[in-house]
Image (cartoon, rainbow, N blue to C red; front, side, top):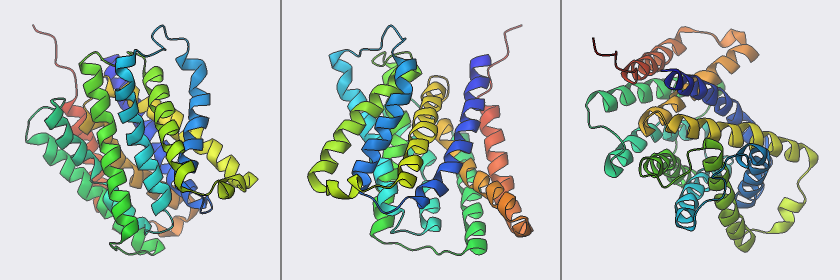
Length: 301
């Protein structure tokens, strides 16, 4: 029970950190997205090295490298798409597309046999998606923005698919005994292989001169994103994946617009209004139902 509670608490922290990272991504200048993602992963690996190397199964077997590579490409695909779309798609469009991730993860989990077939789970996920979408619409009414469909949104949707696949592959690898039991080791190698692959592609198709001209402000933001938003958040996700199903893990993404709402209230209290209430209630009820659904069974007798 303590591990289950710890997984839920860890994912609450994950939602807060991810909610903080979305505004930071918008502060970055328009830099090559693939190389930027590779650097972010390199910073994350540097932060995880001291923790992962203590594990006795730090060095992976050759047969697990392709699996870590797939996991790494899932991460790299999402972040590269997010960086690329950040200056080409509206925030409302990206937030709307992101709420589809838990439902995608649940569907993919059913295919790979790591999710249970039950009508309650998709119903809860749909409730959370509606709440997160209502929060995104409320934020758009306050700060401006519009729904649109263009190249930026299409690329970001593929990134969302990659994000949904990551915990599914992780859960399948754990269930089949192919991946290390240490969350730090799984996070380190998926980030390392994904960063290497996406970095090689970035060097091939993107001008290196632009990333070399990155200023101090962008470098500091990149270090923050690498340590606080990549290393820590994906370690928390891997830690929770060992206990929770992929649909539940990704459902904590519904709290990201809720965190954004709280940050907006902290900056501008005058924006507090009833328009935020329906979405907030739907998200909180959905998360409470998910936590109740994942509770441990009482002992017999």
